[in-house]
Image: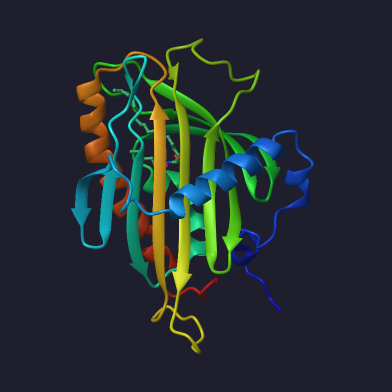
Length: 247
Ligand code: 6CM
């Protein structure tokens, strides 16, 4: 069959061999597995999660947490999007080609290492937020099929001798993010743009890595996370319009 460039670059349904041979593989596999499992667990029964944003099918929860006086509130968001698949969602989240188009906190992005078709290492700098210092991050990113009709992208901080922390103007932040998605469609039907629904669970924990005023940080998160999830999901819906569905 004929493949377009886009189809070839969709997240592979099986782990790329090159990734399993990389020194980071044991860590990437362990953290991704943990994060994906936690993402698919609801917040319903758990205590301590407070709802802070709600709009349509989107719900965002956080747990107030501080480590050595620094805000590290875990965030968990749920959303439902019609007309796009889990694989498409994760493709647009993982692939750096699209990042500047939906990521509004970003200043620069560099691909530090191309591990495989399903794993990359990134260095990113973020827009400065007054009155704190500018932040940067260095993290691996891995996309995988987690079960039938489910895909997830996990991002987690790492180190690299060529990108040492806290040497320039930036303070290095630490991040663990997981975007886990599952697609459903009516039994007995073929998936189409008109009958698929994708449930999204997005989890994020950021340690700012150095002094940042708690009030400012919480205000930034409260404003930026809902903005990100709405913008990202509508971006994917827009990108997928008129393209063959990728399940
Ligand atoms: O998950 C998101 N984006 C991914 C691709 O860029 C990736 C990014 C993770 C970094 C998240 C850090 C956000 C913090 C930005 C503000 C800097 C704070 C400075 C403190 C000053 C008071 O996983 C979407 C991330 C959406 C974040 C709102």
